[in-house]
Length: 84
Image (cartoon, rainbow, N blue to C red; front, side, top):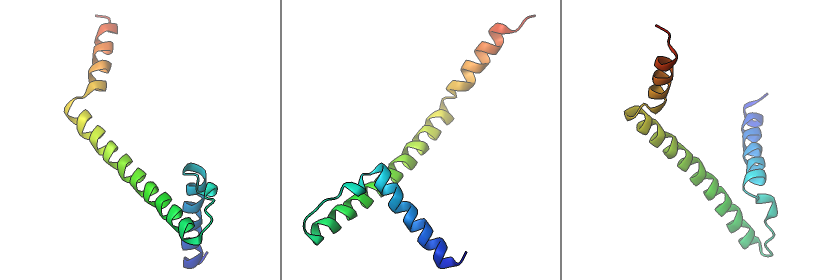
């Protein structure tokens, strides 16, 4: 597979994702300028969605780094089931 085919494949994958998750296939604007604007807004929303998920993951990482909730639950349940 050549470099240009790989690039085209990734771009077509993004368009497929936009059609499935962000309803790009439902764009029915009458004027070409309106269609281009709707497509641009769809890709803006896709980028914002990716950015938001990264920020949320970083937030959860920092939250659970300071408060190891799952570690406490596992330790408490382990200590309560241990037989001396």
